[in-house]
Image 1 (cartoon, rainbow, N blue to C red):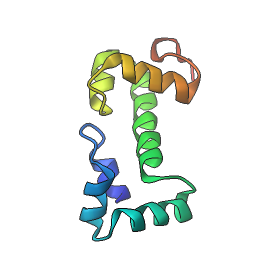
Image 2: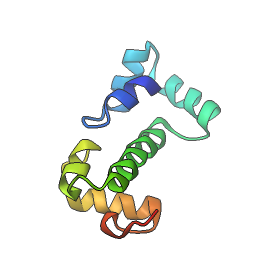
Image 3: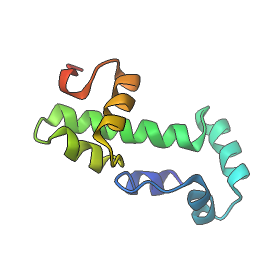
Image 4: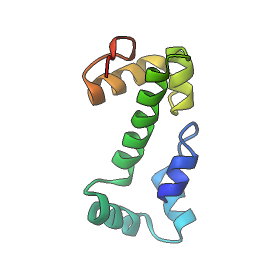
Length: 96
């Protein structure tokens, strides 16, 4: 499931799709993630997407809209809110 998440940052899969691909029930996947990562699959997925966003922001070669799309956000505003929640600064102001 984690490899699927990493391979699908631009078009995130639902937790149900991840569970199906992993050959288990959604509830089992959620339990396994809580045991292994201390977080739900949705939270881990968001962390992976935000880590990629930070990498792209630091790279400096992409617009905010492009970074948002590459990290699975169709709406730049939603992406900016998620980034600010995660890193405490808007992507344009991130000096991380």
